[in-house]
Image (cartoon, rainbow, N blue to C red):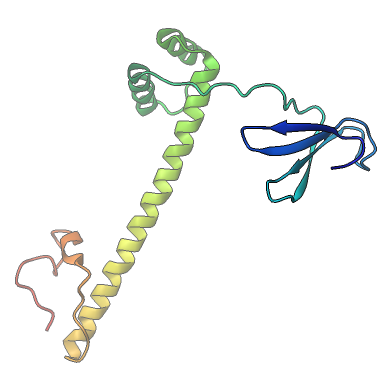
Length: 171
């Protein structure tokens, strides 16, 4: 595939690739290039920093037991930011490293924030639908040619709302 490249084959992906450690590629000295030949014959050249250890196997993902997850969730409900002695004590109690506890809390806070944003978007869209139905109902009072609002919003209306009681008709 090219001069200066060591030829290799990966049977798991059925791809041929070459690695170049000499600096005849035109990239800076701190770069490492790998060329991959796809099954269809096309060649891709990937450039990585030499400091990136591509040969080291990836660390296995931590699997938490149900009991550990229960304790972590319970602690998260009590306090979203666990630091110092609290984190040390929880890690010891759950037989985890402090780093595992720290990363779990970081990930859990991220999930919490993402869920709150999603819930707010759902509430906003329901509010918009609710407002649209109210506007349509107000317009229906004056005209019989407009279609009825059929989004099923009456089930979502609060009990104190004038449209929430049975038998109410805007016309």
